[in-house]
Image 1 (spheres, rainbow, N blue to C red):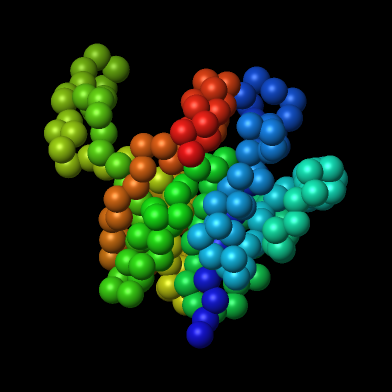
Image 2 (cartoon, one colour):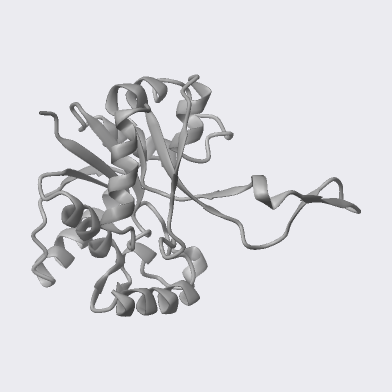
Length: 223
């Protein structure tokens, strides 16, 4: 039986956080954000192959943190690339077979149930991504002066993990990078693959601002 894989992409420099420390290393509830992310997948499947993509300049610091926090969840490290696209491609090089999830390193609160929903969808589909409804009204800019309302019932906010049959994702990533690739789903869609939508979670937030850290503390306190 083939093994589950996850490529966790952690190349952020934390500029919106207003901190010298990249956001994936900022502690939340006693340990760095990134450790919570790895734990979420290890909790879902203890045998999952975890590939952590980090810029070479961050790798020694991460290894130091693992010693300091006695963090021993097995994982391999791949080099971060120029863009997220290149980072995922580098991580995929270490994935051998089966199915693969791609996860934002700073999205540490994915529940076991939601991760399972994404992986289970691959029994019927080649690609599955978690989404949530928009609760805000939305407008599209037409030009500098004008805008128009968008029907929010047709809009979904996209999260990770985005999960794929490994062969499908690797084939899609053989293309040259272009700016329309905002996530992995957009890469496989450009290759003609149907992307199945799975129910996400409002608590599956991405940590990008100091406020997100505060909200994250509350989410962890609820568990």
